[in-house]
Image: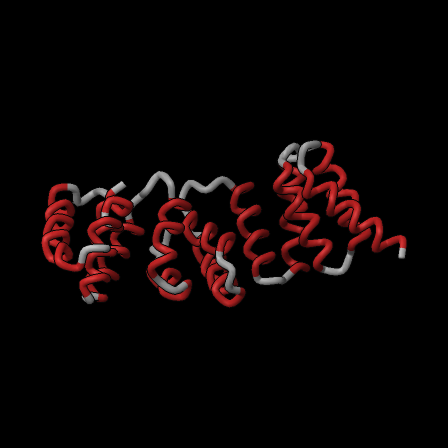
Length: 211
């Protein structure tokens, strides 16, 4: 993609100015391309124009990219998690991915707080999806007493969804109720017998309960 194509240009300081002109031209020709704006933002950053880089990256995030997870991962090497969070548009999917993938606890909680604000504003979001997203948000906020009932309802609606069961079991376990979490993990393992991580989790819980 365009962002990857900037790599050889960045290694040659003399080529930075024409490279910038090239990517600015690309943005003019393809204003609807998130990839082009990602690349342009990187070139602006290298040239020292931080404000222009931020504008380009904000625009790239505001577009309805079909691979939002990829979009965030491409930006991460070039900014802090806090900066990335501040650039996100009010698009629920991006905030959920941000909360799921960030390694910074405070950023995760900020994203979760915004998720709870956005979920009720998301037009066309099925009720069952809203319940799931709210449950995830409370899980990110470490509010397990609110997360567990929502995730329990999400499992009831989609009992064959392994990830929903794992989320519910996680909420129960983190709330201190490992005894209630164990059968949920076991039911998830039956649905996904190849998941070694589930088998390990079940083994750990059984060992801790036996002690």
